[in-house]
Length: 63
Length: 328
Image 1 (cartoon, rainbow over the protein chains, first blue to last red):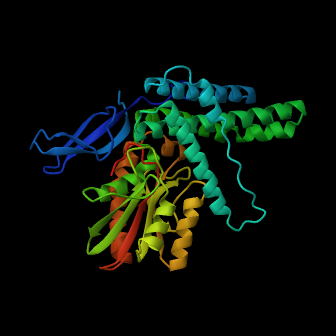
Image 2: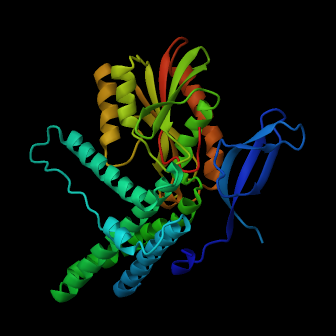
Image 3: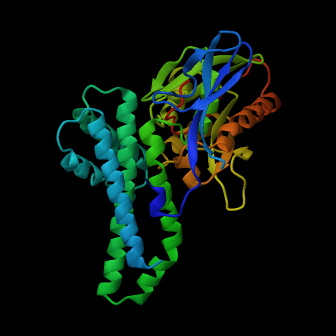
């Protein structure tokens, strides 16, 4: 909403990074409401251990 | 850009931010029209104490800020009585953006109208000259709305993120309003990590926390390390990590004063690690390059601790910044 009032911003999306502390698998997914950094995430697809959200950031959408 | 065009843009930005705040309140269960209450809160002011007799000025400012914060929080809680701390803090942050935009709109309009009314060309020229910088700030404030209402980390949260990671798996104890600390063993040293309590959008009271830890809790730290964002100059790279001495903390100066005071009184070296970013990046959604600076900052902290402290030392590490979307 803010972008049109000023210069056109590059399209971006916010992503959540989950990491497994056992096997170090990293997973990137779209940000969901109530996500926060250091919140317990889902189960690891590789070793079934609990994952943790380690990062939430905005990244540009590449065309 | 013409002055009248710029003023109009700032007005649109102010109105949009207010609408976002009203929508957020409605979405979170407020029944009816909150525009009167929101309007009153946006216009809510704080009169700074007189500096004619500067002794004890910081204490007076701290008192007034506490009264203001409590009053604003109470009003928000009245509107959203059943909501959790995160939602209340998001509302406070959205309100702060609206109040800032309202302030800039009114200041800009005031000088524009006075300049026209008094045919003061020089006043209008000065206004025109500061316009590009001012509009960048307006744009930055507008870009803060989306991450705040979604509870996403903002760039300013990177210091809190580094501290939060160090606190994982340790007991978190409250130490001041919206502020927690943990005791962590690290390379035969004891670290006391302090940060605002996340994932709410707080900055906490880290100055008060350090005062308490040293004066009341009885810590005798060999060093205090502060981690915060630092305003980058044009041409500097976002996410660069730099090291220095002094209290790395922004705001009106109450926390900075307290930390400088207690460290000077006890002769404790005060180190600072800053992550460089612009004002817009500090209040917008955290970017990948800022998030990736967390690892670099941690490495810098490791080498600082190894080089400047010895085994058995107690060290206070403060992660400064708005901890919205960042737990611990």
